[in-house]
Image (cartoon, rainbow, N blue to C red; front, side, top):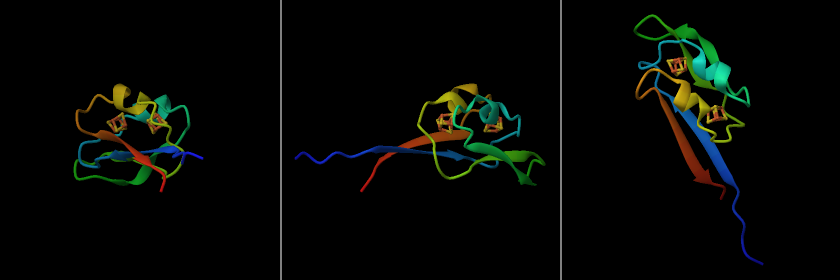
Length: 78
Ligand code: SF4
Ligand code: SF4
């Protein structure tokens, strides 16, 4: 039987690039992004990935007004 690998996605938000506008949080259909309680060097409460459940849809990336803030990764399950 052929080995079947499930695609897993992860998203990373660069704290110093984020302005905390919440657009990604509101756009995510899986509700896996949140604005956290610490501020970055610019004084913004920045967004982070809660760590599980991203489906790689790209909504956060396309809704973010800050270039370079959001990176979506695809990886195969071992
Ligand atoms: S790629 Fe989609 S599911 Fe993943 S964090 Fe962004 S909006 Fe949410
Ligand atoms: S949309 Fe971009 S700038 Fe706004 S909170 Fe999300 S990562 Fe930060």
